[in-house]
Image (cartoon, rainbow, N blue to C red):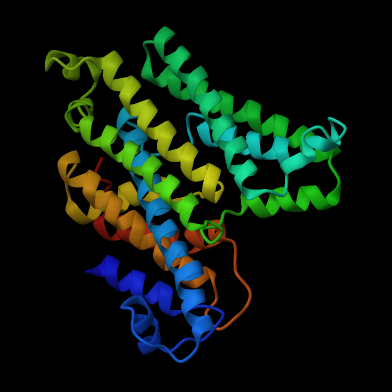
Length: 328
């Protein structure tokens, strides 16, 4: 019910003031006062709202997977460097022409090419992480290696930023702010498919996730194949975080905070409850943040990255102070 209300609020508010009744008439196929409103609702607001739902749900779920796998409350969907790989792919397309004499400039302004490049970057990092995971048995060592991958890709992006011109640097900075309002219906369908695959893999990992809460040795004693389970969790996280970063840019905070928020509300660590719960709360948080970011009745749109932290952080701090302890 809360999700439906947030969805309705999100599509009802924007830079163009559209009466609430006309918004719902457009959705239900009724008559509205202006035909342009129908275009705004169906070609911009509804795809944007669905994108916010997918992005929030996917990031929250991938954050839950990482926190459980590493048994670390500070782990998030980007600790394996997969998002950094996507950022590197985008940086090479946007800023790479400054170093490679225009070879990479052919599609830097094309959103589709940018998404493909970011996806390819995240996929390459995921492959490297999978190879490392097959060699390293210690989960904490894998966490440190993932952070090192993130540092390496961030360093390469810094070098590209140093040599690029101001216009392309500004374009990359805008991309790094994150956005849920740039997807067409075909792109939204592709992102939906990616998120659904990640959700299915996560659901298949629920038994392993619950066993991991008490440590890897306990999980093995229950007959859990740790190598297979770790692969499955890493792949699910890579698909979710990489796909979202490719289409919406790197959006922070949601993956880190929503799992904690959900545990505090439901007072449980059972992933049978947590997995659907983080999907819902992640979607609700992103819809609310996007509603605030678009500054209703104003043509300006604030960076969604900033809003997720400004809105979400005080909520989590208040909840932890009120509960006096963290459930993990």
